Image (cartoon, rainbow, N blue to C red; front, side, top):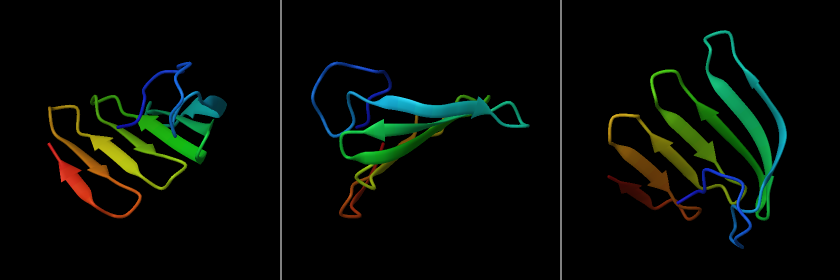
Length: 80
């Protein structure tokens, strides 16, 4: 599962560097990141949902209401 903070641990996701960030016209925040495994993207919405696309092509989506979906680099999907 992707890290949500800039950590000193060694993983495909951390440490990461935020390349650019901003807020779109709907008030949702986003950033582009550089991770050990490649370029990544993150956004968080006002409704509490958030999404990661990681440098290894895995994705993680949390709907902000307790449900989440992780898609591994090989395409395997895990829902909670």
